[in-house]
Amino acid sequence: MEVMNKILSESDVNNDRLEFPARSLSAFPMPDGQNSVQFVAFDMQEQQWRFEVSIHNEGRYAKPWLNGEWHDYVHQKGLKKGDKVTLTMDEEENGERIYRIRAERKHYGFWYSFDDQL
Image (cartoon, rainbow, N blue to C red; front, top):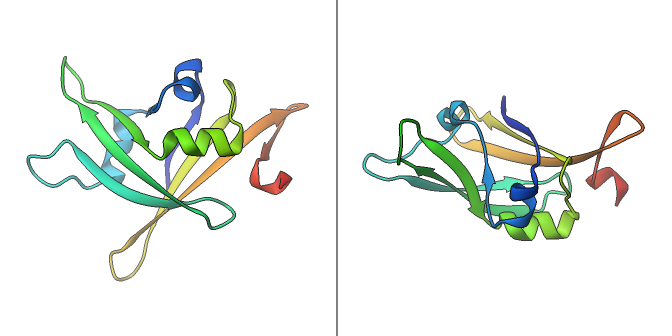
């Protein structure tokens, strides 16, 4: 299941967090009374990335963002404004959730995975 698919903004690549749509929050069960949850996502090379989803509850709507090792992920992949990040989640039979993250760059009208270029 695709959790999030986002074209990165200048803020996403220069800050230590990625803002994403509130509709994606259902993929991250948060314990009652908490406004953050940690998870591990695997990139296409099976490298683990430790992220945290947090909710900023000021204002009318929940404003979620992803941080944790986001800055390291951006740096290692060489992400820039206009690149795309896709986060997916598969639920195993035992209820365990497996998250995957993929970064892509558009080149001549086609999206190419960063991991395919390694």
